Image (tube, rainbow, N blue to C red):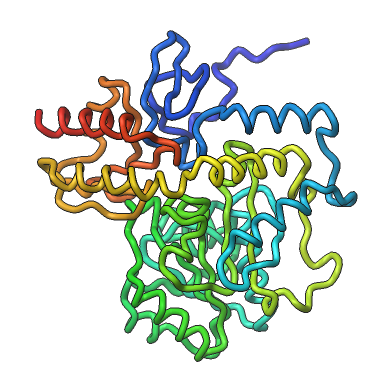
Length: 385
C-alpha cells in the first residue's frame, strides 16, 4: 500500500494553546509532561461541571456498555427523560425540545421553525453576533469573512443592527421579518451583554410585527450566567432558544427549547437528526444537569463570578468588565493576546475574542473560590508587570 509522506494529516486551521492535553480534572487541564494548567477557558465554555467529572464519566460508561447508539428511528428512555428535565429547568412555556448535534445545527432549526411558522424569510440579527458556521448561521453571523461563506452558498444575509440599539432594531422590523435572533450575552465578541430594556423591547417588537424572538444560548446558557438559561437571568422569555456547548459536558449535543405555539403544527418528518439525542450523549447530559443541581453550581457561579468581577475591575489596564457569571470579558487598554500569552507562562488558560483588546474568562461552573483567587493572582501579576 502506498503511504503519503507530505506532512501532518490534520488541516492547519486552528490557532492552538501551547500545550498538548493528556487529561483533566475539575478546573485543571494536564499536559503530556504532567504539568497542570488552570483552565479559565473550559474548552470554548464546554467543561460545564469540570473536566471528566466522575458522575458524567460513570454515566457514559454505563450507557455505553448497555447501548452505544441507535438512531432516532427507535425511542429510548434517556432522550425522553432529558427532554423532561430540560423542560422543567426552562422558564415560561419553553417546554418542547428537539435534539441535534451542535450549536450551529440548533440555530439552523431555530431559524427554520420561525420561517416555517411565519411564512417569512427575513431575519434580523446583531452586530457582533456569532451563530455558527453552517450556511444560514453564517448569514446571521457578523463579519465580512463569515458573510462571504453564506453568500457563496447563495443564502441571503440577515439584517444586522447595532447591539442594544432599540431604535435601530425597530427601524429594521417590518411584516417580512420572520425572527430576531440574538445572544443575550455575545460570547465571541467579548461577553457584550444585552440590557434588559433592549431584550424587553425586542420581545415587544416581535409581538407587534408577528415575528419570533429567538435566543442563541449556545455559549451563555446551561448555567454560565448563574441561571440555567440566560433568559432567566434577564427575565425575558423568547419563543425558542438554542443550547449546545455546555449541555453534555464535552460530548457534542445541541438542543432547541421552544414554546408550544411555535411547533404546534409540526408533523413527522418536519425535523430530523440521525444522532440527535443518542443514548450516550443523553446520559452525559442528564448526569451533567444532575451535578449542576446537586452541587449547587448555579449559586457557585453567582458567588465566585462576583469575586472574579470585583477582583478584575480593580486591576490595572482593565477598562471595563463585560458579561455575567462565568462568561466575563475583560476590556483592556492593551492587546488581549499579549496578556493571554503572558498567562501561559503561569500555566493559566484564558480566551481572546473578536475584539483584540478583550480577554475572555469561561471557566467550569465548578471553579472554586480558591481557584478564582489563583486566577486573579495570575492576572494581577501579568497586568502589573
